[in-house]
Image (cartoon, rainbow, N blue to C red; front, side, top):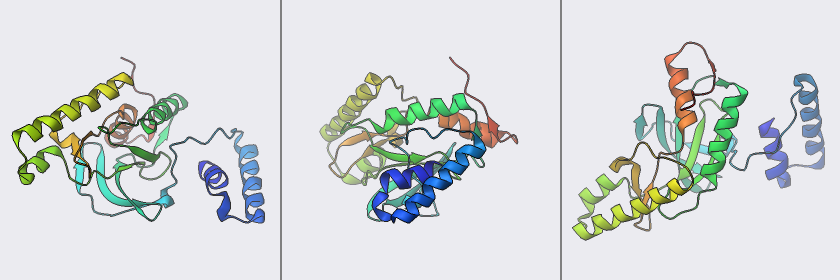
Length: 219
């Protein structure tokens, strides 16, 4: 349903009037059969066919893998794939996930990696971010020969990014040099934050043979 809504809302110019009529009819039939209403398309939703990424990851973490990719055939991006095969979640968890994604996609700060979209209904679920091409801060300073003053400047920029995400009610929780990236403009950018629900889903799905995932416990 999300993919059909995306095509009608975001890719209207690609389709003939006949195609659009058939898609609307299909959506109506699905609604009738499933008794599920079509909600508003989330601003952050990306169908999996809008993104291409390399099969081999350049990094891996406890919840998934990280790949180089291309968005809309021309924009270099980084794609984070989560370890959540055949993910099925309850309605409360879905709302928590959607709220997190809504907050992340609206963030706009030079010291925070920009999230460009995500797909939580693909296999695997993935998140698309801007490509900070100068690697993480640890690798960057080890090869760039920058002065100690430049390193302090990068740390100050990272602190500004941290203050920004705190102002949005988000605690990083995983702050380290590998999560402070350096963009094409030489600015430090925080990454890998604000994904509490997806991390929970990924860890639960990986650890359990039961594919149905309930909401994370409240703290």
